[in-house]
Amino acid sequence: MELIILGATFFGFLVLGVPVAFAIGLSAICTILYEGLPVAVIFQQMMSGMNIFSFLAIPFFVFSGELMLHGGVADKIVQLAKSLVGHIRGGLGMSNVVACTLFGGVSGSPVADVSAMGAVMIPMMKKEGFDTDYAVNVTTHASLVGALMPTSHNMIIYALAAGGKVSIGALIAAGLLPALVLMVCMLVAAYAVAVKRGYPAGKFPGWPEVFRAFAAALPGLLIVGIILAGILSGIFTATESAAVAVTYTILLTFFIYRTMTLPNFLRAAAKAVKTTGVVLLLIGVSTMFQYLMGLYEVADFAGDVMSKVSQQPWVIFLLINIILFVLGTFMDMAATILICTPIFLPIAMKAGMDPVQFGMLMLINCALGLNTPPVGTTQFVGCAIGGISVGAVMRTILPFYAALIAALMFVTYVPAFSLWLPRLLMGYKG
Image 1 (spheres, rainbow, N blue to C red):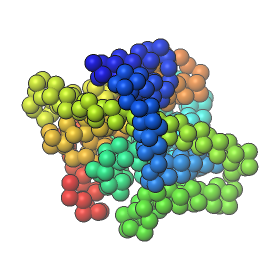
Image 2 (tube, rainbow, N blue to C red; image 1 turned 45 degrees about the horizontal axis):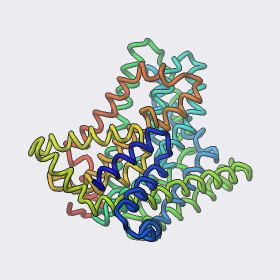
Image 3 (cartoon, rainbow, N blue to C red; image 1 turned 30 degrees about the vertical axis):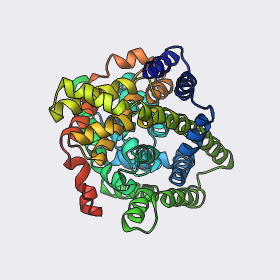
């Protein structure tokens, strides 16, 4: 009965439009009160969930991404992407994909990525005669690669939600190849739609211009290399790497590029504080929720249900993907990771999936949810920038969705995409 109350109140609050964090917390409180447990359990679980040193990486990575967003780094990355692939059919669309991938690497946030790239690329593509729905779809889907990059704070959240079963360093290394696969799939989709619609090709500016654009963008792109090199060599931890990222970004935007202004710096700091507060609230209430799910053996129950459907690992992985995708359509990325990881990670591991590989599966599924109504944060931002309705964008979304699902299937059923680099660079034994 307690499990029914927990599930019914949670989904009931969501249907009523209650924000996810409050829906999680209120459903946990209702269940605790019904169970007759001391109310102090609520606060104990919330504090234990938030009071973890590794979580310091989250505000630092978020702040670094906001500084990149407000510090003018996006313009230099756009110029590099245009010089590299702008001459291909639908050149601005291809440039958009590459630019979103590169900026996602330095920001680690799909929302920051679509905000920065969308503000530059969507008006530019509309001016050059590209349809608005194409410009928005390319931007919002390509920006999702930020969830897999070394600067992604969602990797930190997953590592901690996994309960110490996975190393943050291994996750950071594991995300690079899936990010590349996702970029290639998006390039194929953008090119196919460009050919179908007859979009023109740009003009190759010449290798000197490519080198100039690369030199201008290189200081911003170096942040990915600094984080990777520092963590993989053992010079600093993931938390320390996040602090290094902030320090480097401040030096870059204030003294190298000289594009940061005091008002933009304050805006970046305010947005980082707000985002961190939301994430930590989610972590606190999700810890309560996880406590109750452990108490009522939800993971064991879900595993038993799936085993009755099929014993085949590939079927179990497919079911997990479908469930995560559905949940991701109406839950925030962090909330989905925090709630679903304790349930589905043991099931996936029992079926033979490594926890690092499952992390990549989880992040891609949650990223899909960012581009799917009713939550669809990146899609709403992209549509607002493009001045187009979500309905109009959804009518032509299938090629881009197909690209994302193709990348998800590669990661789900080919372990090497997630595990090859951690094994090569870190000697990971999983």
